[in-house]
Image (cartoon, rainbow, N blue to C red; front, side, top):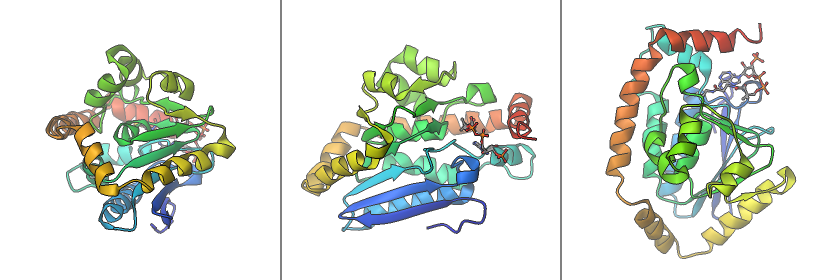
Length: 257
Ligand code: COA
């Protein structure tokens, strides 16, 4: 668990072979800070090493999955004071996503924005409530897609629907993504965790080596994913320094004032 010093918390609890990883930062709609990215990476890496854990289950809290990267953090990176580099926790997290060995179930309620949607491309089963909204507003923020979403989203949703998300920044509902085969089931908020835990329990009861091998085979060659991530990172860093990105971050952050 991270310390909550206004930077949010990641909790990780193991229940019957299932590691429940929860993003918690209520006052910022679970926006991901550097410390949260670090803790998320560690939770997945530690869980993959722990023989008692068979399945990861990722979820949010307080009616929000996550509002994505902390926009204040993005702004800080445009100030020249802190260039994004391979050692930052966000890149550690993104690069760790395709390397996760054990199955990942996601339980989504409320907004899943930016990396909140793109990380789902690395999950195996996604359950979502009707209140869930999926959006990747990278281009509207002057940025480009990340987490290999420019490769994986067209593969999963088809090019045109992926374009609606990744370039038009359209908001897609859980129902639309269920019809597209991306969301496994749309369930009421009070049944979300039970449904996701039931699926995770079914997975945990299966022969784990067979599950992991089947998953690895289904995911195929990771080389194109890794190389697309590297290309996206270069473009992302370039766009973080753009005047459009800076203006978009400042506009969002001044909204409440
Ligand atoms: N980074 C930093 N702060 C964020 C944030 C983010 N990604 N998302 C929300 N917040 C903050 C808001 O600035 C606000 O802070 P304040 O109370 O100090 O003013 C607080 O969280 C509540 O957000 P608010 O926008 O008032 O809530 P909402 O219910 O009206 O909308 C969202 C929720 C998630 C739809 C909306 O906050 C949003 O679109 N967030 C930005 C998402 C985004 O662009 N992420 C980056 C993708 S690359």
